[in-house]
Length: 628
Image 1 (cartoon, rainbow, N blue to C red):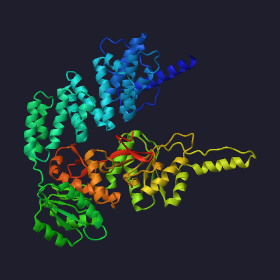
Image 2: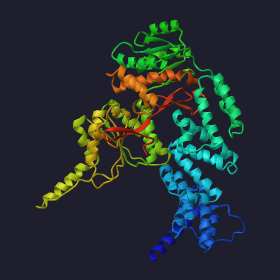
Image 3: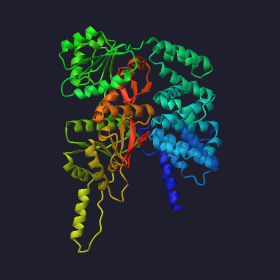
Image 4: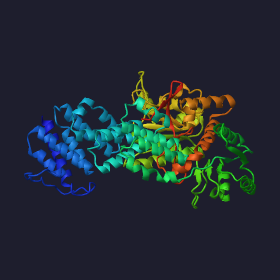
């Protein structure tokens, strides 16, 4: 009881300090002594956090005290006074013998606090711990708060199937409760979630998730309509008219003209005659042939005429050949040096072009018909930083080979990771380990984990005794994740070194990797078990279309390595994108499923790829939705 009294007194002091600063910015804390405020009788409904807390402190009735604190915390959260809300939640945690309803109210507040602190994973776990029967017993306002918090947690973790399910439920169950502004924001989030789902996921959404209402089915059909007719404005216009007739009472019906008018006015690019501009001579000829074969597979059974032009020939010859051919579209070049040479010709100003690599320097001139689809590792590393920052690692370690590419990629990942952490006001102390070949790996890992220091301490202890001592080395406990940037052979060696360097009584440290670590699409060594990595659907996807194409490719070109297989997918996607690029450029968030990833186009014409996550599991590769 004495301990509890001290806790209560200490908490009251903290609460007084926080409330005294309610009128100022949260980061400005007064250092001079703060007198305990005199509580005046409240004659009307409180409006501020301070008034609600005053009511709570003025009553001895536990239920009333609880209710006033709940209102105080909600008011603080609504006003983005997160320090105040956190202190009030701490006070609520001191209440004993909570009912199921009170526990649910507390968990909702805690999840909202976690979301404010950019911890969506913990927030979703907190919310999912609440029994659904208890949720149904809450007030309508509290139920809405629960679902809004859960939707935000899923949305911020990019779990768009789960987010979409909650968004559609909110629209259906609370359409008469939320404001017009909230409704508009909800519609934007529904559309964003729909845009992030592959088409196969959309078509099975109703069957796998829940029985869709008429309104919810309308949203799914709208997204499918846009995707299936994106490259044909006439067909899209007709399909939208049919959709409007079928769903005449749909909540978004009045927003459609503004949302899609610009798309309807944009003409898709013609695929009648295409020039494939690649290095068909020289040392990188095989890479060019892999892209070509992917493109040929995509144009099979079409009327497209494909012309092959060698990008290694002189600039004047390239311009003369393409000018004579007068193509509808150009794909390539692939090599960065050839991209720079092509940009200098300014052919992209008159012929729509999809580059397969980035130019060395940004293009200053307006280029409304120039696009860029690459297999650059930078996109993959950006995604890794975005996805892994949600796991709140405080001291991750990046492991890379000590060469120019290893240093460049490791520094790029570290920089993006820290930028992502800064956005959500989190600290990420990132270490980078460079190893000089396979002989240096064990030493590099042991040194970083301080295993060598532990061995030295054990050796010193043994010198002072004649008895046999059973000992285990201890590793640093602050390191909470590894990210490997290495080729398959190096990764096969690195993972066991990491495993044996972790103390047997310490928590396992998760290990992540890029697609660079996956070098064989047929097998995965058991030593790699539990490594989570990213790669394109063409390599790790299990859809029937992908499996069929992959089998066909392996039969025709069994000698090709995995990098050449990825270039095959690049060629295939480059053709599939042509008649959708212009529309996707003016329709933010819209994406399509490709062999190289989930593809979307920025307003500058850059095609962004979102890769799949997978996990090595006892010699096999298992597809996972997220690294969480």
